[in-house]
Structures are given as C-alpha cells and as structure tokens.
Image 1 (cartoon, rainbow, N blue to C red):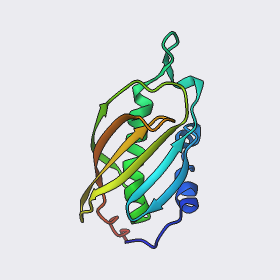
Image 2: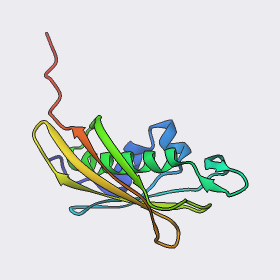
Image 3: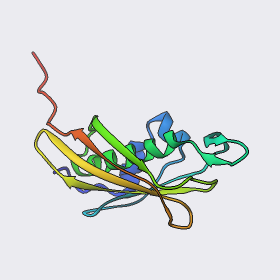
Image 4: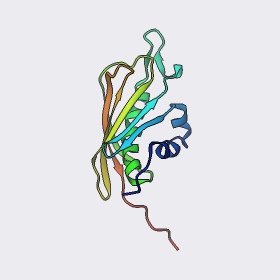
Length: 142
C-alpha cells in the first residue's frame, strides 16, 4: 500500500484532470473506509430543460471516478477502469452532489470498488461497481 494520502493530496492529484476540474470535484474525506467527494452542480449538466434533471452520464462519471479514486487513494497511482456498471435510482435535480466510494476487493492484478451518488438532501441517485487494473506498472525497458 502507498503511504497514507490526505484529502488535500488526493484532491491535488485528482484535479489535474480538466474534466475533474469542470465537475468541480472536492475531496471531503479519505480513510480506510474509502473516499467521499463532492461535485459542484453546473447548468451544463441539465439534459431536459423542462424537467431540469442532470444527465445520467454525469452520474456515471461520478460513480466511476469515485470508485476509481477509492483505489488510487490506496495505491497512490492511477488505476484504469476495466469494466463498470451503473444503476440509476432517481433523477438528479439541480444541486451539488456527494459521491462515496469504497474498495470491495483489493487484488494483485484487478480490484473491485463501488460508489454511490447522493443529492443535497442525501437521497441516493445512482450506484455502481467497477473493476480496475491495479497490477504494478511494468518496469522500464532498457
């Protein structure tokens, strides 16, 4: 396991990505249980202007990145997504979102993590699980 990473250290790594910056990701908590993130709501997330709910792709992205970063917080390095599934539980209306992720199984080659996304009132919006490549990087050739 990598050295214990603080929420600030994880957020600094995570927000290097322009998409994560655009999502307004803030790391609230990192511990043995997992990770908790918030995403700052944006008007561009709206898929249906009459009903004003958030596009499911935003929820799927939050499930993936939260589960992924639960593992990154453990490994200290990026872990590519191999497979992922998402279940949608209710429409996400305008408002900041909270995502909580945890490691289900840490493996030598592949690991499993899950995440749930909640609205500002704590209602479950989406949940999912992913498989991630956690094998150590290959040694440099030469």
